[in-house]
Image (cartoon, rainbow, N blue to C red; front, side, top):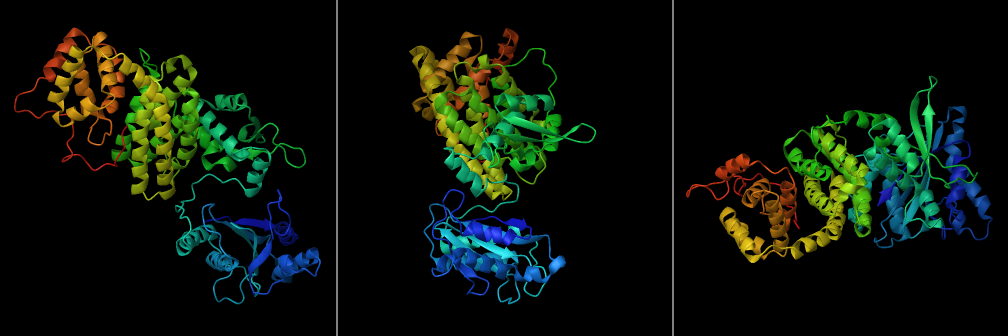
Length: 568
């Protein structure tokens, strides 16, 4: 159940609101508008007065609601109207008028508009014109002339809504922390529906601005990217000519006066204001130029693989910075994906956006490598290759998002935890679209039987507890191809297996061979070690008969408790 508080001001604010509630609605969506409850139980109802002119009854109702306000004359407050739509979820049962009346009384009591038993409280009405919601309209002067005590009414109403969900058996929403981006209004939803759009203009602009922030390395580049994606930009300048903020609009999105509908960055989301964007760009400055540029897919994957460790062992500020960077990466990945995976990646990015927000200040500098490597991928589309890079990165992102879900759970961030959970579903689907063709191609190039036997023997020596599962895994043939490709370029396959096994436990891997493929693929494409280095690594992997089977692998008995991850 979603309540949303809207305040109104002006001499005719109450009359305008009553007229809207009993009118047809902006898209003829109002059906049978009528009162279900009021401050005194017998307020005039324009929807249930068949022998009177409805407009006259609307006037009468507005006058009665406004009476305490008018009594104050010039001392009346500037803001006089408190409007709260309360909407049930689509899957909820249809409530009766009596049930909605009870909900309305509980909402106004929680908000401080009309505490239970207070006969001098504010005047209010609850109007129903649809199966799934009501509108509560109140005036913000008590009948004794005082102002209502409605401190923190938004939080109080949200808390009451969570209790109402339990009492009425409705869909239970996660408690929020005030960090979510502003939701589109009902008017915006109806407008999108009239225009045949699945999402509102506000949501389209929010996505495009987020992508521009993720892809930009400077403020100038940010604005240029916005315009390149078809967004109209209007800078807000100060007296000195400096840019203080910005607004954005979609071409063709006009109001009733034929003017563009502008949204400031801060109304799209708190972290999309220009000061916040400037801070983000400054905190993620460019990395020093490397002597030999690395593969950006490998860099992005390595940075993503470090996120679980940051979420487990680093400060909350660094952890939050990692989540912001991961969200930026997900914003841009759809541009690198094939058509069948693009839609799921777009959904994953849209959902995970909520998981990037909390009241913890983000240390963005710690996530610089991930941000820069994703930007490099965007600038060099030729590096996308055969899909292996994207599959490898998505494999690491799935683990990172699972740890993000656990991190939010431990911090009691309910909405963010739910967002991470939903993100995993979309990422799993996208991963399947990307990875399956690559794995099938690898399996078709599997090496000869003797080479496969040699790899199998090393597995049985290195990880006897998992060797049988790996050998029976459908991805075993693809794994042997990756090992053979690495061996052909001069790598020692036994050493690569040891390194991969040491870097990732297989205890929670549903498909252990697939879990190893991408890491070995990345390790195998690194610069081939010199013969002396290969000899040193070979000596380091030689074991005494009484040595542990694999000293690098953390056993379940000694491993710290981590979130369960369903591996592919």
